[in-house]
Length: 240
Image 1 (tube, rainbow, N blue to C red):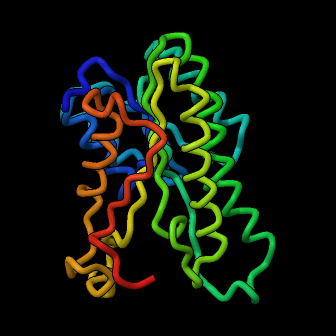
Image 2 (image 1 turned 90 degrees about the vertical axis):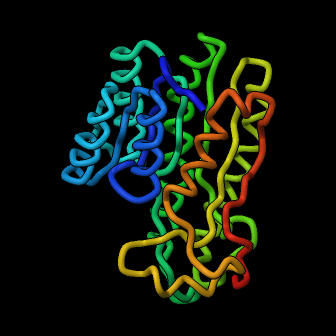
Image 3 (image 1 turned 180 degrees about the horizontal axis):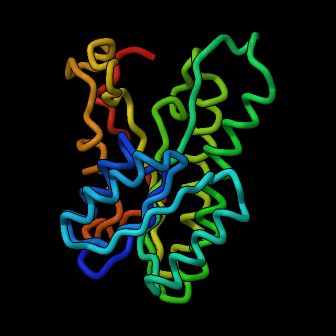
């Protein structure tokens, strides 16, 4: 896979999965726009990406703020001319008993996980349509496929992202734009690696880099005939 000459906009890229995606995109030749609310870690990621000789732009951004999202996208398009790839990775989750949860928590989950992804997508689509090219990759979750009792609002939000992917793919299929979703199972989180080894038949959690490989494929020319799909990367999860 080669992304030379392409520009990718990646949300939630300061650490974890988003950082892995951004670094791999840069390694494959892409210019990268990275955004996150974590300013210090975002800058550290930008420094790491710059080592590969690509252009990198970092934007401190709360994707639940529609005006800020539109301004960030417009600024990025002005600087790079075209956004070829959008990866909607930024998200939030919290566990707990749904009966004891509060509606403010559900709203925050949906504002970030669903509306945030819709804001970035809506902001970039005119540029993609104008250029008859685009690759949109949303990050879902197995929670949105199966439903996880400890993450009810998160499961609902990721189910919405999967449906958003499928519906939008039909809207833009004839415009040179593909829309796909990559849904991880248990992915390594610093400090929790040993707690997730029993969740897949492979016997370990996945790495952010392994998930990033699936995202890069969905964003590549090799996947040009694939759209509206939800790619599950979960090591054959055994517990929900």
